[in-house]
Image (cartoon, rainbow, N blue to C red):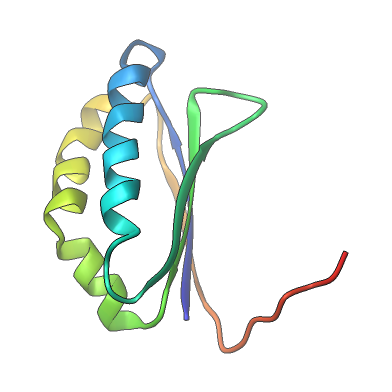
Length: 101
């Protein structure tokens, strides 16, 4: 499994536009084969930071997502939306299990 955690600082003047693009990206990405989970949320401490949490079955699913039209559209718009450098981390996970709280 591949897990991606990404944080994007969005320009406050472009926030609404950015959130609309992100909403479309998330909705389309959740329908892709091999995507186990795909979510985005604004940071509670800074509403201009959007955090992504993505889970893919394998490298093929991750690669297909990167080539999808909706991801390409978002990637093309991203430089104009950012207020700083994104932070993206990839985790290659061999196993995962639910944790009881």
